[in-house]
Amino acid sequence: MKDKVEKDKVEDVSNWEEYIKNIGNVGFQSTNIGVGANILTKMWEGETTNYLAFTGNIVASGMRGLLARLVKEKKFNIVITTAGAVDHDIIKSISHYEMSSFTTNDVEMHREGINRIGNIGVPNDRYVMLEEVCKEVYGSVEKTSPSELTHLFGKWIGENRGEEEKERSFLYWAYKNDVPVFVPGISDGAIGLQMFFHKQQNKEFSVDITGDMAKLASLTLNAEKTGALILGGGISKHHTIGVNIARGGLDYAVYVSTATEFDGSLSGARSNEAISWGKIREEAKHVDIYGEVTTVLPLLLKKAHAI
Image 1 (tube, rainbow, N blue to C red):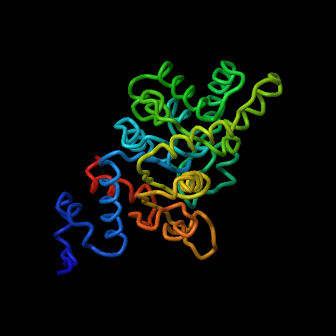
Image 2: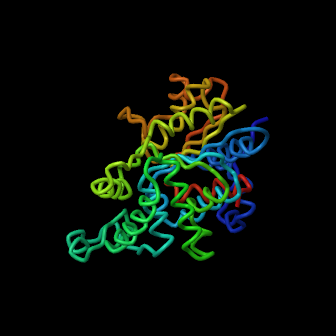
Image 3: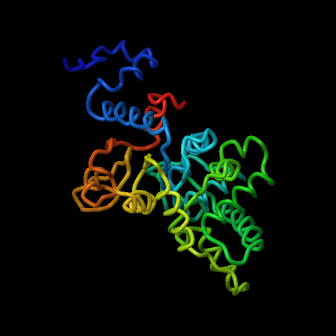
């Protein structure tokens, strides 16, 4: 017998614990959240190597601390993200961002020296703070890789920030728990620009991206099973599913995105499309949750008993 559609009455949502418990029977994307939570639970059972992939905007938002908690509690063995995510994590370990508006006057914001990410404002002086950290970290190495740099940034946060600041940093917890953070597009961000500036005076300085590819491939090929929680799209999504071709695809995959598949973009590509490439196994457990991450992620993790 099929499950009933539940929570038809308004008063039912007043008890959130009960609502979350039955979210899989609500329908539409709520049901997909329930499916995704079940997949995450399976990923966290047994010997599965788990990937957490996310885009930089999520770290700029108030979800940063939740990402840090997932790494702190060792829910994931590997992090794959963007240069922007590293930028934001370092900066927010030093200072805060400001709430803005999607409909603000951007000419006025530019004149005030505030950069807008949706309805979040980032003052220019935050990047001056980041520049000083980059100078210190880049000055400590000569030949390195993106994952070695993210390890050093996490170490810097651990040695220079207080307990409250460290608690909300995914870079710190990755450093603390020896979780590699891969950034395949590391030049596409403020930390990449600072690499260029540093190299002008330090010609021997280099960042070997191919070294990280070998490291990531080794972790993937030696895994008994692999699973991924992929928040957003772009390069972090593709790098995660792409490396799994080498082992015949992911065994588990949960996608959360607002992108659609109709333009043929990778960001909008559904998990079933990845099966055609061998990025997800034919028999894998997978689901696509259509929704914005700052709304979906807390519900997903609550349902999966991760928070």
